[in-house]
Image (cartoon, rainbow, N blue to C red; front, side):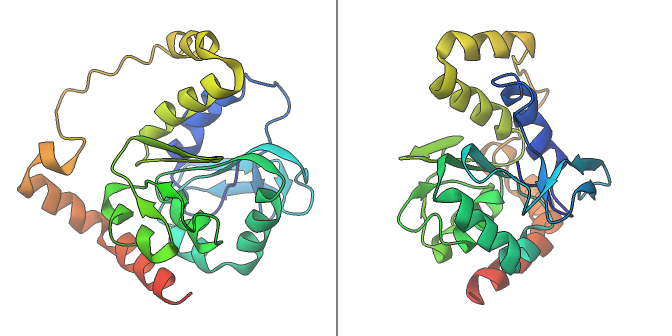
Length: 217
């Protein structure tokens, strides 16, 4: 699981909670340097390996998103790491704007993929991907998920592929993942124009930065 400054912590923590049980002790949190890495909301996660010490052969390569996405889309060392590991990885995956980082590494060219709604239909196609408006999208060995909270859906869907449906259902029950949100505002269509406009204003710097990074490739 890649960590980088400005990642969204929930992109990592949700999938980590589900996937860590698949093979205890074999999940690596990887960053350019081992040690603390601050998220975009200030929560710090700890990288246990760096780009060199991360195992070369992986079952799953995972990339989160977050406000730091545009910088990662331009980071030569990170993109080289992803390209190298992806060639020997069973599943190449992302949550939220992590798909833009995969795309910047050339790993989604011609693949159906999703991302956070704010960039899915505008930035993702610039990176060679075919945008799909779904919570989780599988295309061959690429698995991408929509924004932030979709990380739990992604992890359960992937766990089912790796260990079977009963394992995934058990993990879902252990996590008591039975969402009943107090508002029907998780998608622009249901949130309405005013709320979508307000959310878009918050996300505008990320969108603009990601657009520039994609166009500069």
